Length: 171
Image 1 (cartoon, rainbow, N blue to C red):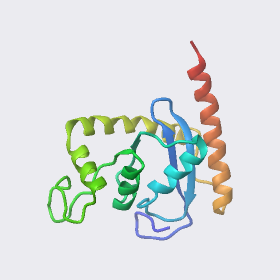
Image 2: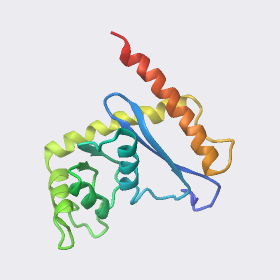
Image 3: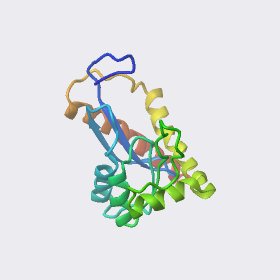
Image 4: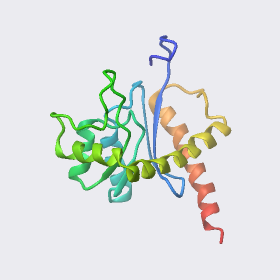
């Protein structure tokens, strides 16, 4: 993968879908693509396969969703909360574009509203999972290959869910 220093090194990109309030990992995926763009729909489909339903609201990182993903989610009845990319030309990213479909237009209006921005702030709690994994030394993997990396990340997710389940079960 291309790194921040413009060099290329063996690396993997891990995506995590979680239940925000409970900090339970619902689904993970691993790939070796440096960009998250367009990975929202596959993650939502993975979540549906695991939970047998789609979420009503989906809070995603800014680079995770694409216009096609947002249109698909809108058609499935999902409210997407994902900040629009900053415009290099200085155009307000919340303004409707002529190329926007109905789902993207609704998404732009949602994200421009104070209620949408407030709802999106709940996504920060999901970062606790990543912080917990870093505290458990998940920084650099000693395995190679996507399947082996996926196995290691699944062990971290399982451990997280067991410990979080114990916390949630306490009265």
